[in-house]
Length: 211
Image: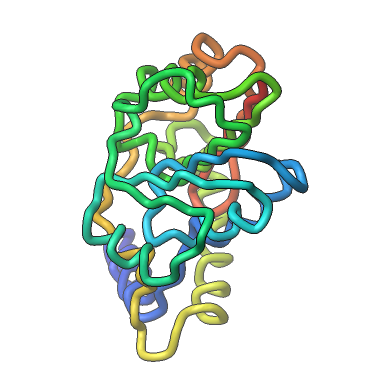
């Protein structure tokens, strides 16, 4: 029975796709100052968040490892955004970014190593905001995951494009999360002391850190 329900859920999502990450872009922006200098968007995908950051920033560096999704990102150019293909772990330290954002990317990379790299590139007084995915493990995790199911159906019905065409941002190659939230908290406490981590609806968590 469970497999049948899951199959029906998957069929609905395929017919009514919507971008769960973009749903949180406004929340991410609320964590940031009204104006800032340099910003870095890690795992920028098709560039929606980078363009929103560019409304407030002097300049935005937007990086992703997927060359195909970056081709779409450049379709709507802005003078103060630089899109480039790059692994976040290859960033030289000392980037001095006032803002760093990272959406649904950390589970593709070595978690602790990438956090260290991002911290090394954050300017004094800067803000790092991560939106990630995690592997449900606890009762609380699974309770929130189950609560997200009817909400997902409602939002999918209301927001999904006609004809079931997937948004460009959802065409990038992805993989499921493997780290439970408890491990994410443990590693983040070591690498980013004082970071605030919370669970969100739609199988996401946030991490906010300021230097």
